[in-house]
Length: 114
Image 1 (cartoon, rainbow, N blue to C red):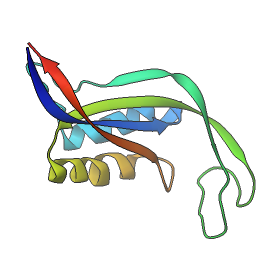
Image 2: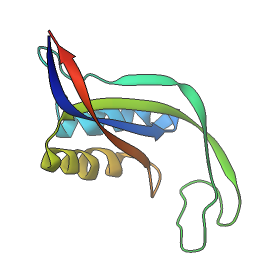
Image 3: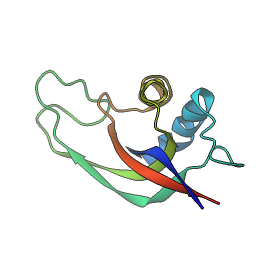
Image 4: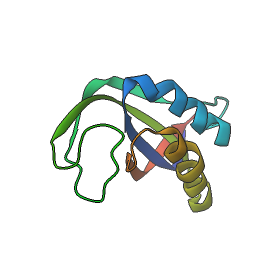
């Protein structure tokens, strides 16, 4: 076994936009780990909650009103390369996500390869 240092990226997205986000991500990065590519984990739907403040331009909901929407959790990992991470977020995730401020979380982790 070999532990490979990776960035684990978690994104919450409405179910209707999941496939478009996945296509956008894979157009920028193959997500290759070992002999596999396009590896992603999708968790069951949950709820995302937010209240847009003045100055926000929400694609759903109204400024000042609490909004709750169904979302799914999409996770993926890439080797720890800051330039690759930035490209993936700026070109693969943000343009294909419906929110003006998507919930994107990045953790440093390890991927176990045989």
